[in-house]
Amino acid sequence: QKEVEQDPGPLSVPEGAIVSLNCTYSNSAFQYFMWYRQYSRKGPELLMYTYSSGNKEDGRFTAQVDKSSKYISLFIRDSQPSDSATYLCAMSGGYQKVTFGIGTKLQVIP
Amino acid sequence: NAGVTQTPKFQVLKTGQSMTLQCAQDMNHNSMYWYRQDPGMGLRLIYYSASEGTTDKGEVPNGYNVSRLNKREFSLRLESAAPSQTSVYFCASSETGGRGYGNTIYFGEGSWLTVV
Image (tube, rainbow over all chains, first blue to last red; front, side, top):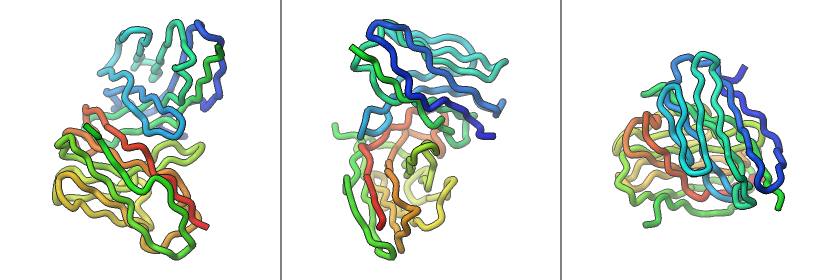
């Protein structure tokens, strides 16, 4: 079993839909949780960063962490074609390596 | 502000050939990394350098060597390329923390390497 599980998709939604992206993990030591966005032929860029449990909102993006269930989510409201990308979850337990999910490919259809 | 710059962007190698991927960052970061990204495998850490003068193996170091030339530059060398090393390679950096502890990791644009 991988430390971080993420459905690779692809996930296709119509423009304006609410998108839900998820990851599960097995390492209870993880306490830093991140979402990276990667456009085609580009490097990943940090989108959201959360410490421990709870929610964090930034514009149309909301990150949720449920440590009791070892489950993290990224919600995108009013999705736009420009949101079409691969979204990678990532997590770390502090002075440990950052473990990445394999990424979920999202396509927002105009 | 260029961030993390890596070269070359594309390269085709024959089996057994050697090459070096170059990387430089202009953010004054202490830590630098080399990852490879393969379909279905995600990002895997090859080597990292927590600070100038130190390097350590990551998850998949076999077949690679690295050099932290100075604080800005971190190169990855394939001594004898194999088809299994066909991949997309990303250089990255972070302010501190040998393994991205609590810090944003900034990635370069990627280098597409094909070994035939």
